[in-house]
Image (tube, rainbow, N blue to C red):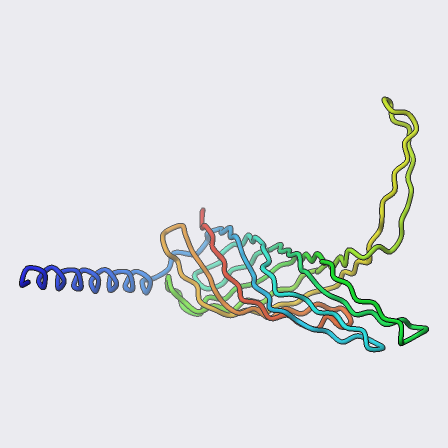
Length: 223
């Protein structure tokens, strides 16, 4: 029994020492200055409801989006970069006829969104573990996957001769986008880092308003 107690005490001491060493490493000076970084990102967006004209409405399901970014650390605290992100969102819509308000239609589908832009990040502390804030500006694209028109194109194929095919155009919108995020960043090794935080995004479209996101980012630094 005494031997078991000594073993348990030894395990606890080792755990405390290793945790203290890991904490000391995270609180040591960072090595971000004049390095490039590449990251993979994921953004979780909760369900959202929108009210349109004449009683129409749109409900977006919660969804997990993806992205990647490239940045350059000018010094230990400040970096500039660019990013691209995308997601596919299931939605349900309630449509009201403009001529007859009693005539309505409900259906479900999905929409595709994409965003490209530039950002700037400020690490509050020149440490391996630090809070951060980030601002971004870019261009967002939204494809509803609702057919707008159908065109037919014909051509001469060297094997099959005269061929005609139909393709559809969907309702799409694009506009400027803006974002602000804040969270915690950790340089886990000399090359590996991670960030996690909250992000607020705005798209300059009527009715789109803003989006709240939870963001996780994992990447590599190199010179």
